Length: 335
Ligand code: SAM
Ligand code: SF4
Image (cartoon, rainbow, N blue to C red; front, side):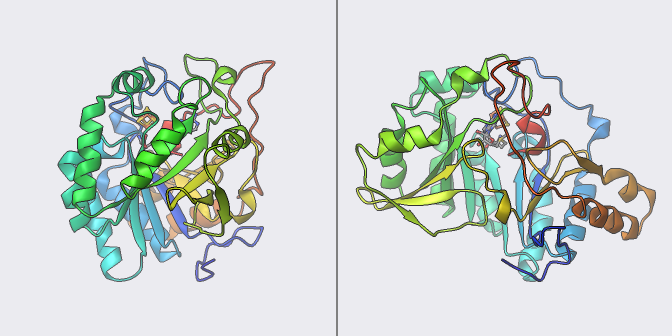
């Protein structure tokens, strides 16, 4: 763990990783993430690109070494490449180790080359199926071929890709072995994610929930999985797949807490800082940022918030009420 951060939480964890949700909007409506008729934030509540840049710069000064842009869909934010270009200057100075993004891939055909030119070396692409019709069903609005062209463009630009696949019972569990072979054949890593109970959606989450322990047991009938200590600074635990030679990650917030090594915080496109993905406590950074031209107030607000970072979370999908454990949608904090 990088201990050079000046942001150390009450449990001794250095905060070196910031996820920034640059928009809550999206060109897809994945069924586990959003309701079809989502109400988005009024544009006036959003931080401008300049404010997002200023916020990131303060976090970098305070010790953040890795920055991940997410959303909503980060690449649908207007002029997003301007922000990425500005942030890449911190890569040039060596203050930042990495700028990455999590994307649904829909805009990558257009942006992949420019992202690579800005020093982005890897992207996470969310993909839950390789079947175009199922893709349409799960994303509601997504166009499968466009995402495939995006993946091709990203690989041509030299970006390393990790596929993120949400494991959904009865939807893609039978297909995951095929997806794994496909991803590894193409030199991509893959991570499977348990569904998390965040935000009201139209579907019943207890029907979708597939514990990854079950998925792993299922995969082990076809593949030889060996636990490896590989770490990307994220919460995934990795295995090596002997048959493909590739890596597979498991993100299991429900069956296995990963909080003890948590080095991250999240900020939304309105400047709200969440210290934990699984809890509602938050700090407003927009007001202190807008209150003065200097960054002292902002910096103090960040320190106070880090001082309240909780030890961990305890997600449950509540079978009696079927209500989400956390009321905000994943598209607010971006995972
Ligand atoms: N739009 C981008 C994308 O889909 O990659 C970035 C934002 S999206 C909210 C980030 C990740 O969260 C995606 O991989 C998505 O599959 C995942 N996600 C969304 N809702 C989720 C939920 N309820 N449980 C688990 N993962 C979820
Ligand atoms: Fe959009 Fe990503 Fe949520 Fe799907 S998971 S609706 S692509 S924000």
